[in-house]
Image 1 (cartoon, rainbow, N blue to C red):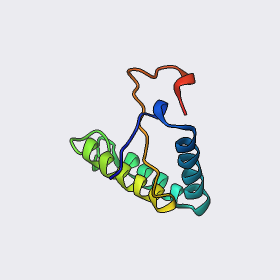
Image 2: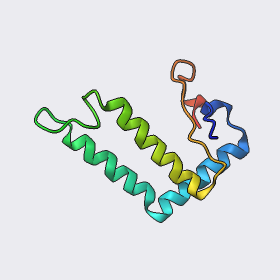
Image 3: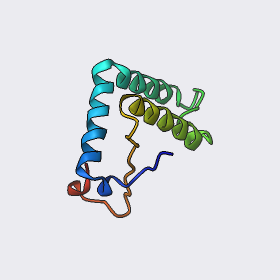
Amino acid sequence: MTVRKNQSALTPDEKRRFVAALLELKRSGRYDEFVTTHNAFIVSDTDDGERTGHRSPSFLPWHRRFLLEFERALQSVDPSVALPYWDWSVDRSPRASL
């Protein structure tokens, strides 16, 4: 079972593994595929577009699915990696980021 942690609670090893998996996705081109997919849904989310990823009731489920697939891609590189979350209500300063 995957347990997501606040990015501020990651251990140094968890941060290293997360960044390494992210860099591997970028190196292989898989990260860019996620960017392309996300951008395609942003572009169509206009007043005359389909509004599937943004500006619609499907915003939350679409992004939940998108992040789940992104996390699974990270885990294909390193099964121990979980996508961290950012608690904006607590971690408001740049120093609080990864």
